[in-house]
Image (cartoon, rainbow, N blue to C red; front, side):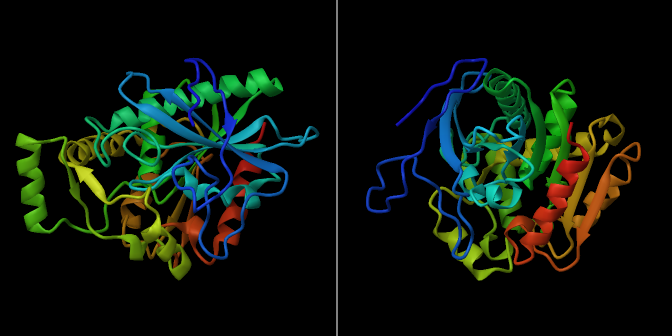
Length: 330
C-alpha cells in the first residue's frame, strides 16, 4: 500500500497490523527486540511516501503519534534521523518513553535505507541526505501547523543520522528546529578499514563509485543487550553495505563539518557512549569543544555501546532526552 504526499505537507495512512504470515502486506507495524515496549495504547503508527527534492528517490517515513484529542503536546514533535544501515521501524519503542513530552515522532528512512528507494548503502553525495532531511522537517512543520495550529520541532540524529542532522543545520540554518540531540554522531569511525577493503574502495571510486560493497560486520557492537543484537541481525530491512561514493563523500563532509563548529546556532546536546567500538567518542568530544556559547550540552556514558537508546540502561538515556526536550520547549 502506498500514499504519495504533495510537495508541501504530509499525508499519512495507518500501517497494517503485524502479521508475520502475510509478509507481502506492507508496511506492517514494526516490532521491537524481545522485551522492548510497544506503542502506548493511545498512540498510532502511520506512514507516507513522497518524492525527494531532486526527484530521484521515493522516500518512506513512519509517523508515531498520540491520538488523544486532549493531548497538550500535540504541537511538539521529534524528527528522528536513523543511522547507517538501519531504518525508522527500529524506533517504535520511543513513544513509550517520550509520550509525556512530545505528541508525535516523525522518522523518515534515508534514501537507500529501509523502505525508501535507492541502492542500499549508496548515495552520490552525502549532503543529499541533509537536503532530504531538511525537506522532511519543512513538510512535517507544515503538517503540524495545518493539523494542530502550531509546530515545535526537536531534531534527534543517531550515528550517521547525527552527522546528517549537523549537515542539515549547517546547510539549512533557517529550519524551524528548537533543539538538536545527537547520539554517537558519525564524526570518526572507531575502526580502520582492512587494507584490502581500502584498496577495493579506491578502485571502486574510480571505476564503479555507485556499487555498494560489504562493510565491516558490526551487529554485535550495537548493544550489550543480546535481544537487540539478535533482532538487528534478523531484520531484513537492515543492511551492511556502502558504496565508494558514499564513503568518500562522507570523508569530505566530515572534514568540512569539523572546521565549522562556530557555525552552529541551535542548542545541541551530544550523547556519547564511551565504550562505543563503531564511532570513536574522543573525536566527538574534541569537536564539541569547538561549539560556541553555553547552550550546548555534552553527556557521556562510560560503559555503553553504540546504540544508547537500545542499551540495558535505556531508561536513563530517555530520561536525559526528556529533560533536554523539556529544557528547550517553547
